[in-house]
Length: 261
Image (tube, rainbow, N blue to C red):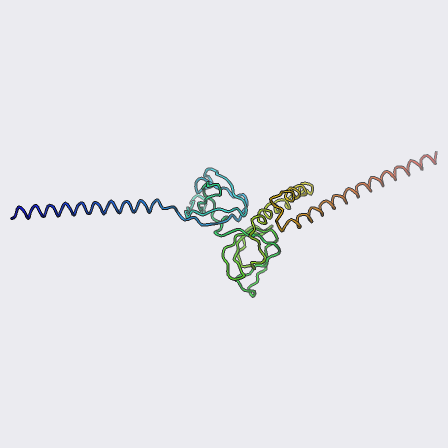
């Protein structure tokens, strides 16, 4: 009887060990599945032009690419701090061509890109009684962070300013059309060119680009180009008049000399 009891106890022990082993194996499989689950990407946008993307979260990291103002990106959810750069924070991003890298967190913002279609008054909160002294200019590009009824919260750098403004603006003063955003970015660069001839050439290039025809900024750019061309014609006319005047004065002098002789 004792022998049978001993065999029965051993059998129960073996079954228990096999059960524990099976549970451990199942737990490991479930953990592996969880680790292989892809991270959730978050849509974001660049709010600065020409930001470097690095292989590592450091300014010394290998250069991967650069991103343009208003360019769509995705945040992977990973972040890091570089203690050698006064604890500057970096975030990992994924580009449209699936390349991944790290950028300084200050220059990207979760949300989507928008551009101002006219002067846009900035408010502290979504309330007309909270008006600030700041406003975005036409063709400023910014990130749309939040929406509340006819109001939207945005963050961006206005032309001529050195850092970002964050505040609430009216939704109707903005465009989220990708063609308008692209034209706004290129137009800003063109309008900053000091040499009027080169500026006119840059504007002309935007106007002639068939991909940009539908932009509501086209008329503004055409007017700017006409003004530049008119200024150039006026300069040519003034120069011609001066030359004619010099030639006339010279002829009069020659006539006087001939008469005196």
